[in-house]
Image (cartoon, rainbow, N blue to C red; front, side):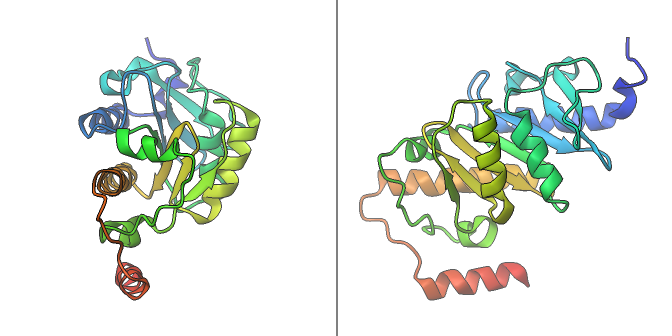
Length: 214
């Protein structure tokens, strides 16, 4: 039975959030309990996937409702261990409504490399939607160090690579964040499987970025 606090997220919002989580699995961005998702649903409220939930099978009972400013959970659920950087990003970037942490195969393989010095601009979608990803060194999952570093890195980026861990991206909408993750995974797949792939030139990248702003 729902309490008054649970009602801060409507049934329609629950369904949208669940559909987005399931879509992450459908696009191969997560496996089992890997990855997590948050979504701004009010002036200071966010839906956050619950700890250890399988996003591909997410249910309404696995949605934590959190206060963005304080980080307090308002509906008795236990949010993902990474909720601190989700809420911190939402606090710092008013234009962002969705934060997605994912571990797709090729992007995560890139994150685990000894060097992450790739030019990811091998497809037009990277300069148009993502830009240059930031890189955060390895910190234990759920740690304050990881949260602080990720929040700081995301202040001026749309994508953050977490070394030996995974990726974080953001969006104005749930689909926006998912689309960026899917495009970045494609770019990483091309880079890691095509030895002769070439990146776009600086002029081409800048032109695409200007088109994206128009």
